[in-house]
Image (cartoon, rainbow, N blue to C red):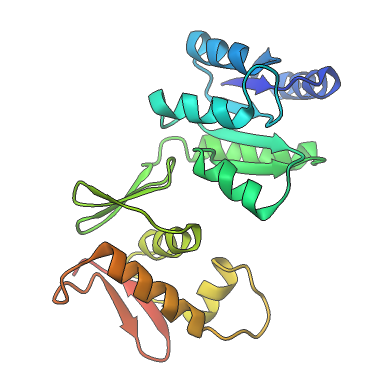
Length: 221
């Protein structure tokens, strides 16, 4: 497996290169955004570790440029930028993961292994006429793209990934909202109403059903 490290700080790139090579990976290093695009094109890496703040082009620009031609190669941001908005911006640019500096090398290894395990899985989720491109975070009804907020996208993706299984309100709040204490789950209804309105599905097509007092289920039957 080939990994491209895009990092302009020599100490970090050398540390990552040595550690990953000891794990058996073939490693390439690019120290600026333009070199990153060139190396990604010539070497066709299986995974990219991408810093945000780079010379020539930012990591965000590099990620967007790669995604225009390559929807499948996992891209993991390794960056000191750590606000919620920056995380969302990185994911919306097409990144698969977002790891904040400083980070544990062991954790990074596990994340890399997870993405390689998932490499052969489909990057498109479907529910009737609804499809989600998980790498680019795009949602379509038939061939028409529907723009969702990040939370709406996460909720819809969560339900479709568990198609045929009842998702309880408590599980949704914990897994999608990352809230692990008592919280008003009525907020889920607000987001579900917005999703249904944006998807503009016929009322007689109940792809996402409300299980009164329990939660929701995505089902094509």
